[in-house]
Amino acid sequence: MNALESMKLYFNRAADRLGLDDSYRKLLLTSKREVQVQVPIIRDNGELQTFVGYRVQHDNSRGPMKGGFRYHPEVDLDEVRALAALMTWKTAVVNLPYGGAKGGLAIDPKTFSPRELETITRKFIDGIHDVFGPDIDIPAPDMGTNDKVMAWIMNQYGKYHGFSPACVTGKPVDMHGLAGREEATGRGVAIITLKVLSRMNRKPQQTRVAIQGFGNVGTFVAKFLSEAECKIVAISDVSGAYFRAEGIDVSAALRYTHEHRGSLEGFTGGTKISNAELLALDCEVLIPAALGGVITKANAASIRAPFVIEAANAPTEIEADDMLYERGIFVVPDILANAGGVTASYFEWVQNRQHYSWGLNRCRQELDAIMGTAFQDVWDAGKEHKVSLRTAAYMVGIKRVRRAAELAGIA
Ligand code: GLU
Image 1: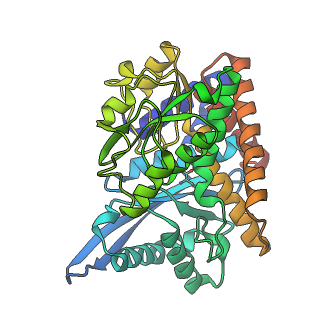
Image 2 (image 1 turned 90 degrees about the vertical axis):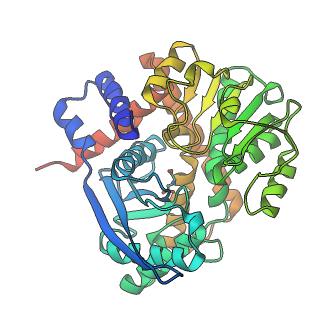
């Protein structure tokens, strides 16, 4: 089942619990606008290549739409639709004044030169500059994009609309970005993980954690959880997984990736195992922090960790989610667990609009407070309705979006 079908089923489960009627289900499952544009470039070797860029703006009942741009070979319209809707529920769960959107290009950024990537990004913005902006829809980084790409977006958008740093978030700190944005998704995942452990009366020192993915999110999850004294027993990236029962030296792994162009290939601070073995490790917390759709009905039975914290977007297929639930495995859904990134994006947007900078400490404090409140809201909804945290999170999000749609009025 693809991410869009899974999202709709998760939505409908929560909608059933809320008694949401069919007309509102239709409204909330229909994208507000879907844009598809041609992105042609001349490659460094002189060859003409044409790509398709997507931006799906799912819902703006609660405010301007918000969500990342993904550059990944598997991007397609249905995936972008699913991820855009997840942003709507995510921003509502953390109660930001935003709706949801997502965009992307089906390219592998590693196969392009920096000049080619810049050209692709600028051409993409040429195609969509009139449908986004600080009060309409604000892009941000996602898989395969980073602060540099966001800087090009701000610059290209500015050519049409003038100086508008709030048109995009996740920018470099030296170009109207926010100290604390880069770490925020990982920090939020760590905050939520520690909250779950404390509810379960488990000490971080007694907790073994396996993290799949060592990119922007996975690295910061590892950093913050090891600082909190959890034992990070495994990490991984496309080169494979690395296991050490006594705990990986996270600072050494971070240093290694900095010296090896972001890759763990050749890292000797752990025994090499496969990504499938990482998912099945004997540990307390499993954190998928890479691609979507990695926990499937084929491997869900092998998962041994009693807690799964979804740092990636849509890492668990619905059949697998049901299998985990039946086995009593506690899953914290993406729309709560990884909402720290968009929350820090909100802080960046607020500061850009005020032309005033808060500093890292205030950003961290406000992030911790927002994640704490969202966790409490979802936890309480789960207890009240006796549902999984995923259904509870969807219920919290959908209820808020529906209320806003109703208040705005549909004439
Ligand atoms: N791409 C991130 C997400 O999926 C962040 C989006 C944003 O900051 O707008 O939540």
